[in-house]
Image (tube, rainbow, N blue to C red; front, side, top):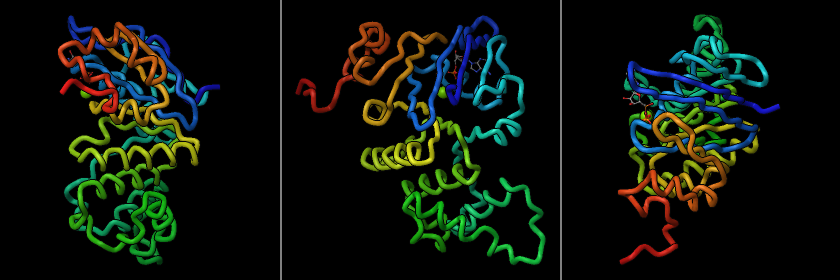
Length: 258
Ligand code: ADP
Ligand code: MG
């Protein structure tokens, strides 16, 4: 049974068809990219899976359980996680404290208790930070981190919820190219080691083709192609959809005209 099965999702906003009969599956440990031009419906599909939007029609199954109508909180408890930007208010806290906060809220504990707050889940937080390569920065304030390192902390925070499915909407936005590759390498290795299915949207085609196991291409609310990065890169319909940015789908090493 697939980790995630999406069947015939439909969503319209007035006259705009944001999703039409969208269907796909995602397996444990898989990195699946959802791409398409602006306005294609990527965020709409994402938000229907995350529970922020209700589909007009269609079904969403997680581990075989129908979560189509479940609240975001209920989905979260079932294992649907997503990365969020570290909120401004948390920048003054240390890296470890941010992850500890996430662990506390995931375990729905009262924060008052006989254990000093700063010790709550500290070993577990350090373990998660080690996984994203940030253990050495545990006691630094988040505000002192480089942008790429903040992204790693955001990943650790998302992992604190023990997701089975991780939704990442443009995870590398604002990052330098080498940082993007590093973050997605890390994400892919964690996806495999923890058997997490990752669904991500991404504008950077190098990231898409370099890190996705499979790619879905949305155009005007419809999936026009699904396949491996190589299949997608060669697909004439996909190339057509990206016209105007005709080199967007080429490998950098394939030699762009100088
Ligand atoms: P993408 O994330 O691929 O850029 P979106 O899912 O955000 O695309 O949008 C798909 C289409 O649906 C667009 O035409 C957009 O204007 C429209 N749309 C998205 N959300 C809403 C909304 N809440 N109300 C009205 N129209 C919306
Ligand atoms: Mg979007």
